[in-house]
Length: 609
Picture 1 (cartoon, rainbow, N blue to C red):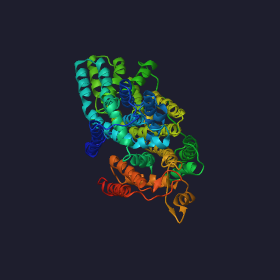
Picture 2 (picture 1 turned 45 degrees about the horizontal axis):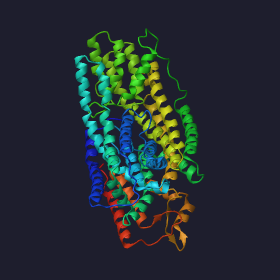
Picture 3 (picture 1 turned 30 degrees about the vertical axis):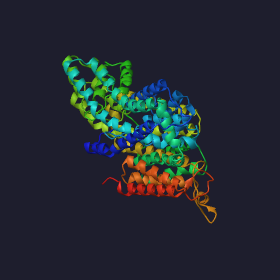
Picture 4 (picture 1 turned 90 degrees about the horizontal axis):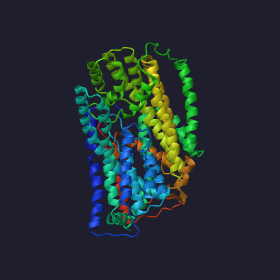
């Protein structure tokens, strides 16, 4: 997370208000159907115990998120699988969660901004799929992808309130420090995560317990499977394959520059022409980018060298103290709020260190007060700064020097850490897992966790160790040019993976094709002759154009979905081998209206620059 201005924050508050109305409309329709006595056959009612289990799991997902994702259970691939297990349909949960994953690849918070929250959307979408009896197959489960987004947006709006309200815990901690009750600061920081967890549990709990009511469950199923709605649901199954383009486009917006185009085409070609899996794309892209950037490093910098570790002097701290600091660093964001962000978390992590270094109560109070000041950076590479601060304080640095070090380094390490952890490692790890999970392979979530957990834990641990070992000398090595070099290498790899993901999971040809033909010749076959998987490439470019124009995220999601839904209702795109048929006047009118709305959003919904 990085700092943003209050202006940006207010924009999010303004832009996302309509998502609350969208969600309220869905609930209102369900309740209306219930009271009108609408009934259906074979609706699956979840038990109160299952509803409670889903609510508790959503709460755990919120803790995992705010505690720097030590397990990754809040990601859709995992959240969908666990929800499916709770509901007795693990295969549907696995496939639905994996497909939803691709739509959330590029969505992660930076500073005061918020994005739709993936876990709650995934849990509710999976629950809905079980209630209405969605088949555990990609072509059916993909219709649940658009369902996840408005729920995720609702949670995002609740989260905004949490980000403002969690300042209560910061002020509480300030008061206890002033009184000398230092030991309670850590507890205050930890319980500051509870509102974050509740922001996930509340919307999930409301929907889950509604689903546990037989009348509401049958009303929901009847509403979706009625003859009037069924064609729209089928069209959603086609439009759902458009949504992964959003995740790809958002990541491209983060990283893309003209010089990265060859890397994007490389990843796209590996899938389009050689039909390689995402794991294979990752391996070959690592080799290519590694070779290129090692050569560039030698040309630009020569040998990589860090001066010797800080001089050994009288040691007050032990390795056990550093290990404890590592464990406490997982709570750096626990009471994150707009006012101080990670300030209370930093004080929590430094308390055991300061206890050993400070000789008087007044000194301890002064240092903990300083550490409670505004602080914000990427929470994994935060440990580099933490290690430096610990080493420098142990060597006798004064309080102004430490304050200056924290202020100077949190920005650069935020940029590098966001690029490395949240916009490269996390999306690629879970995209690889989702690529298997979408095929019904339970190795998918396991592989995602086997990539994410060891690497993220190692980055966090060794950032602390090397930050402590080399102190401020490491900061001198990681100067501006070096940080930029690493970010460029990370971006090149990420862009290559986005090419592969776009070719793999945006309208894959086994599920979606263009149905039109010219004089008996299929337009789809013409497109395949020009460039295999040209349709997904065009959709990715369209999504990238939307987000690049500055269309707000919620409107970009709406536009992309309405375009896919409109073309599907017009029968321009459809399932494989489907021939074009003129739609009914009602569906033709609906499709045209949806596309017009989408174009209005695209051209008039962009923010002023």
